[in-house]
Length: 622
Image 1: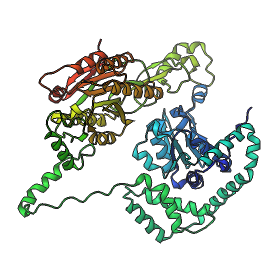
Image 2 (image 1 turned 90 degrees about the vertical axis):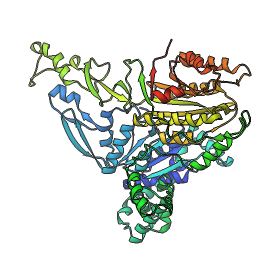
Image 3 (image 1 turned 45 degrees about the horizontal axis):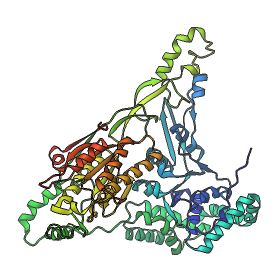
Image 4 (image 1 turned 135 degrees about the horizontal axis):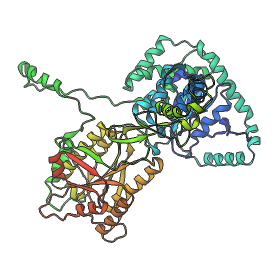
């Protein structure tokens, strides 16, 4: 058996703040764990895995991304149930991580329901399993460490907020330091054992520091002055809730313990704040404007109840509306044809009606994962409606007892039952087939060229896209945003669940320049191809909003021809799409409809979408 060696923690160059955050997490589980974020190749995983040799008896258990629900949370011991007719709980990785460290690499790629359940168990310290007739409660006191590359996907704010600490891994910019990193890696590759021996003394020193901090931690009492200081720091950061104060005090205690002190200093609080507050800082809310002097006592009593009856918007509404209106109106005063190359920012038409998106995509036998309310699909998780049973293609992960008993019943006369009432063999086992609804992925590709800025067309386009984003928000879809203008296309927002970010990007989207439609479609095709590598079962929908008047091409040729060529590739790739034609001139060229035909898309004009308030997205048209 080959013994796995790890790069020594003490030999990693730089990243001092990340090292300290990891030490805090392994010494004190009450600090809330740590989320380490950074670009690829910045030693995130190496740092965490190197902790294994300095944590003493505390183990680092790594949770693979392909782990099933049973592997993570535990479940019914099928072998015991089938062989002996006894229901017994089989512990999962979470139970084995009790009093240890649970590490998740690329946590942003793990299923969201897993992350939520893991964090809930870690915060409460217990986990309850209610499944298949078994009821089990086990302790789950552990530190959770997650690493992620933000370029590969983001985490929702509630998930980030449940991590006590946040540490960013930055790439080394100093040339001598980069050279030293390479030297140490080469030395480790040549002779791992000899290299580790060079840092054995430093490693032992860190190990003793961690062990001493664990013993010292319970003796550190939090004085009242530090509680007040924590409250002041969190209030100044406008952090929501009170998790920040609790994590801040626990992290400060741990820093003091790692320093060998049994008392807290303000410097400990300041050091802890660097890990606890950055991800929780909020902008100060502006005070409400004073009431106009004309609203005297009588008018105020009439207007006040109406304001209270208004329902809050599903997500943030546009800010600084007046300056945007001014920029838009000033642009509108320019003569036609002038200023098209100048950038201007149109307001969002908040009066655009709500648009409901209905998908009529072909249903297949593909098993998909995720949450949402949009599309009905088969799933291999234990969530969703049990619709039928089938013969398992591999190990049984979701046993259908009723179908298993029915399969075993005809053979009972010929089987040795032993002390059991019924004899079940492996060939009798049946797997549950479940269906559930999940969200879809909508990639909005918006034409932001100069022609879209004329006659407040962009204002209506933004209103239409925001109306569709509201529907995506309600159905828990993922959204992405690409804008094309001047000579190129830009991915303003990678695919994410944050509809708020999409709306903010859209609000500040300027218009101006030429119409590189082919660039926009090519960028969309590239984004979806990269996304499909991560989620092979994804069913994306491309929403193209344009007038189709492409007037520039990357190869210097005809912009329309190039756009139609890319559109044909999108159709060939099987991407479902819809085109919203924004052309409103007296003389219509119908180019957007031509592009829609090339992509096999559903087609709507902006006016038609506003009138019908519903958009049917069907399978690719021939």
